Picture 1 (cartoon, rainbow, N blue to C red):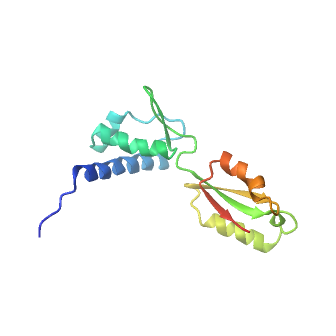
Picture 2 (picture 1 turned 180 degrees about the vertical axis):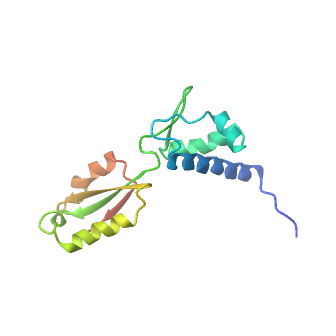
Picture 3 (picture 1 turned 90 degrees about the vertical axis):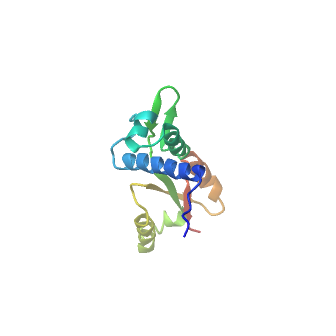
Length: 153
């Protein structure tokens, strides 16, 4: 059986994924915290046994996801909310008002919160009035850069 050798572009993609995962693991493990400067691309390349251009491609993905900030001619820094994905649970206002103490409301919020890893996700709760979903919650969702919504009609 003949062995298949991946093309250089696909093997480079896999190597840049390795750089991406390693740096993300460093951040999640607390080795680097918000505001910390990461090692230079060349230093990371030596640590990971990769080409510095491959490391740069992995870091570019972290920049796109908002996990690190790239400051040209200065370095790469861990972003304030590195790796924390903003989510929102949007509930009708009546669950906040007269049904706030109802067991169903508590079960709903507890169930939603238990499904998410607090190290990776931040869950906010927003309320809306009937026929005012976007007016009541839209600006807050946009300003907080929420990437996922659990909507309860």
